[in-house]
Image 1 (cartoon, rainbow, N blue to C red):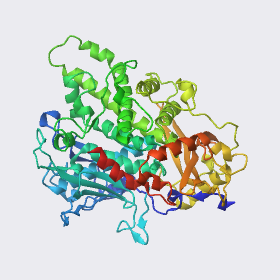
Image 2: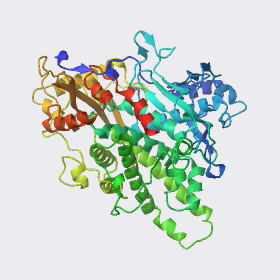
Image 3: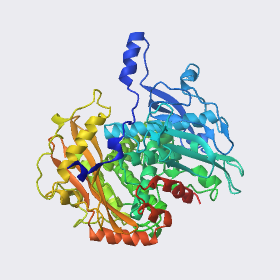
Image 4: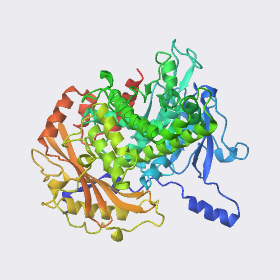
Length: 612
């Protein structure tokens, strides 16, 4: 029976990301009589070094406190400041030692390499913690702790390595093979403007947006093993758009930045909040425009969108990502306007500077709403199919994940998402209309029995709720699920077919992951589910694999609540896939010919093209 399915890397590997346990620190602190802080404030650029002081260029970012070795090196992030172009290794920053005289870390600097070390650690760790809070579990990475027989990390632990000055290259990217974020640097062109000058050095590691964007790639890859396989154009576009969205809404954490933007206008569309990587536009672009912006066609739900911003299958990845970014930001703007309409009416007709009390209220609403949108976006990943994602399916994931948590939706968040996606022409396959009920994922076609061994009472849980289950427990859960889904009467319900060794070859299904899904409802009650990825592939030609499978969400009673299916034997999907492969480049076609595709290598080229 066991040879009819396999386990993915997240099930079989021994090492998993293990964040610092604050409870352990506090126990030691009680014994020593020394209080241990909850967070560590660190100074960062709110956008990048080109931001003017009047636009709140610098702020402090609170990251979860943990003891740090020089680097900084913590429990899941290790900063390594080696420059492969200059062949230099820069002095590592010791934040624990610096805390005695610089409690917020060292001051901002474009010439002290240690500040880039501080900034990359702070932003990556804060992004990691944002995912942890939204998911209710410890986020993991997709790479192993060893490469061959050699440990990636000297201690053999699973840590993401961050290189703030990796090489002279107009690029920054996540390299899964190295288990690293690699930040390049370049020089400004003749069009450089404002606080930049022609020939001046531009560091990607000093851009808040770039660091948060690349960290999101690493975390998204850890959540979905096959999300980097570009089986349709939306896949690349989704990775880019989703990473931009996380960076965008994280920018709202800087209270003074939001306050500054809303003091100018009660609308949320200030470029201080919506422009991406402005320094890149000012130095390597036309000297004026940002690399991207979240606000491309402001207007109500029925306002037309210019043709260049309309969704069309097969568009270039960054164009598609920009459409996803704009659509979600439209939903954010509409909800913000609705929630603050009474407050803004109080200031109607005030042509002088807005009262500080009004600005404070607007700022508080904007920050809370941005945090809610971050949680909605991140949680929706658990409701996405495991392969071949489209924007329309991501909309269904958003709607279903939010419905599970807040069925009433008193402010119409879900309607705003639907209208925004529709405004940009994003289509949703396999639904009769765009009503909320039609977009919700549905339970399996036929009622299914409980999965033996996967009810909440059957699970062997770790001592601390945030810890990952033991390797033995992960394998036990995966085996229980594998035995269940390969039953002849149930294969089709999970998008699977019978494995075949001969032509056409069909590999056994793979249980890629099985993770906890904890959610705190508005009434403070806690929901617990399991979310699992099951994938399968079959040969559709001598040189090409075709992927399918399902995401299964399993309730606390051990029953399958949703099976989000992409059938591995779907003729319609295969036809769309073949059409996409005809216009895909050689690197993308090669991934579907490889036995063990290394899709993360595409990110370097994808990001290089974005800056041309």
